[in-house]
Image (cartoon, rainbow, N blue to C red; front, top):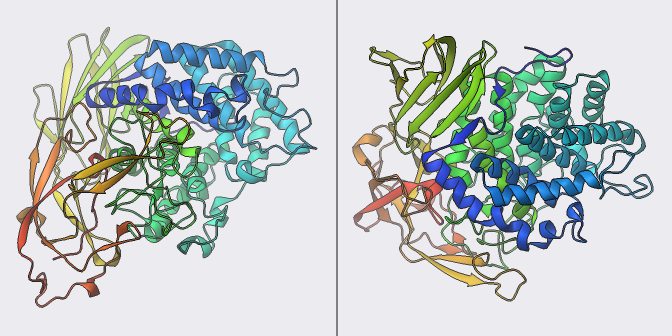
Length: 638
């Protein structure tokens, strides 16, 4: 039901812990818990010795960033050691909150010593997750007192810097408190944040954001890719305050703008670290990937548009895993859609980042991603299903999981059994503690032409692509199985400079390239294995053009299912692969440690679809983009 003064979302996220990961996504989360996320607080000074936890290291955003992903990870997996350490850290924050409501790291005199409020917004966003997971009333009280302090503090020290560009993140904890204890001052605070923050609708109406940042160009707040990924949710959060129609319209308009000017085939937009155009070489910062995913979760929740669920899956299954090593002990700052080498290059060609930006490492280029990368998988898993306003449940995204909740005082369990996105079938098994009627809203991907659902032993029923398919019936103690089929047909799309990319369902496919990993920076602190820095070099040819007909992709590409491995997003663990035909392009060489740029003009043509190169046709293997560490994804046609 709507709360007075705050519009209800189309679908409401379930309390943290209601959705439990199963199957491949549970394995993925355990890999994360066994990797950097589960251990960063034990050795990395900016978290382990943070001022937030009583140390002397960085006392601003890095520890709250880590909590923001580590809390949902720990509670989704019921990972006792990690939960114990997080609880200790939260207890320290609570014990050292000052009488005036400010947390310990906030300076005593924030007027004389200006303090960017971003860290306070972020800390409260992390703490409300802890409250949701544990029900600890002291945490809700601490966040409420912090928000009270912020209400007055914004008059003395208005938003500037990061806080000004990320004001909307403060609405997440405000709404959390308001929905439990409505008070007019909370709505006043939300309005004050919006009034002092950047107006992204006005910003995106300017020409500047359409222009790619030049290589070695000018860093700008307005074109910062992480700000952009976060800001995609501003319209959804702002809409809940006063239901402005322009906010609802801008939600998709902003994404359409980014696709048009900076879009990547992974569903992301280029930014290394400022918006960088559509070139598949230019890169995307990891922080922007996890933040854009969280924004899409809010967008789907607020507006109920399946488009946002489609985009969420595309980013989650492609861009997110591709920017981590398969064991999640190292990560990149920037990933590239065409990435054939990861190495330290002083003559790099990033827009504003440095020579180590595509290393797999502990903190390549800068430590913000080291602290902020953790929220991607856990929040995705936690938002797979949501509550609908008609007393039912809605599937936002598809992955194996178990949902346990209560509807009309009856305990409900929903099991999702699937290897999607590596398979095209999903089984949803529903059972309840007693006879009870409620609806299921099933998101049908926009690409799934011919989608069907079979309820129990009934007939197959067609489902409309890009819709929320309704199944409204009475459920009981005997499990009812819904068999969903989302046919995945190959598609070849034309990309930057006339290159082609291969897609099938929510997955993008890339060339499988042999890899050689080599440790670097061993002399730097905290680079002992496994949390070291690594270059990755190709050991097999990568400079292929793809011999495909975009009008008849089925004729030139053969897909094969494989078992989904223990590491689902790794070259050896990929649950599907494809065979295609291609020709080497000898003129396509490495430049600056990257695949050189190539356009149709660089490939001589005679008849359409036939290159005049004398290189023979070869079989080439493609695997899902998210399973690669180095790759070619946008191919010249040959």
